[in-house]
Image (cartoon, rainbow, N blue to C red; front, side, top):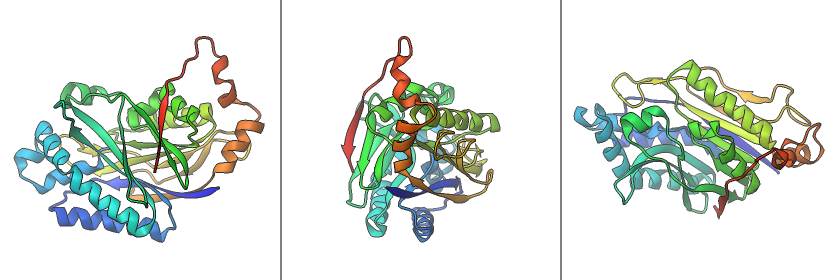
Length: 296
C-alpha cells in the first residue's frame, strides 16, 4: 500500500477573525489536495494563531488564550471535519490547549477521517514551558488510528523524545508515527528531529514531523517558530542511507509531500540488515506501554 502524505510547515499568522482563519485552513487543505495528498499533518499549537482574532487581554495572556482557544474547539473541529469529508482525506488538525471536565488543561491533537469521525490524542509528557508557565498536564492514553490509508500514531513534539511511547504505537501496528511540533529554536527543532529519526530506526517505520514556522511577536505562546518538515525512515533496506526520505526548506511556509510505501515497512522489519523492531524485547529490562487501537 502507498499513501501520499503532506506535512505542513505552518506559519503562525496574526489571524484577524474566524472567517480569516477558516479561509486560511480551507486554502491550505485545498493546496494539499491539489498535491494529491491523502494524509495531511498540521503542527502542534498551530491553532494558537486564532487568539489574535480576539482582544489583547486574550492573545497577550497565556491562561486567557487557553480558555479562548479551547472554547473554540467545536468550531475548529467542525471546520476540519467538513474539509476531510469534502476532499475525502485524513487530516491531523493543529493541536490546541483545552481544559477537561476536571478543569485541567491538556494539549490535544485531533484526527478527522473522510467518514466524519473525529479522534484525539492528548500529549503525554509536558515540556518545562508547558508545565511551569502554561500549567498544562499530560494525558494518559496512547492511541493508534486504524484507517483505510494505514495505521498510525501521533507523538506530539516532546512525546517523540521518549522511546516507549512510539514503541507502544509500533507494537499496536503503527507503520507511521506523526510528530506535530512547535519549537522556538534551532536546538529545539533538532531535538525533535533527532528523536524522530531515532524512533524511525528503532521501530523500522516512517516518522513524519510537521512544525510551526515564523515569528508572532504578539503571542506569549508561539512567538518564535523554527523548523522544517521531515519524513524519516530506518537507514536500511528500501530506505535512504541517511534515513531522510524528504526534508523541507528551513522556516519556509510550505507543504512537504512524500509518497510512503507501507510495504517497505513490512519488508525492512522482516528482511533488513538489522531487525531493531523484532529485537526490541531482547534489551535487558525492556518494557512496553500499551496503545489502544481505534478505527477511523
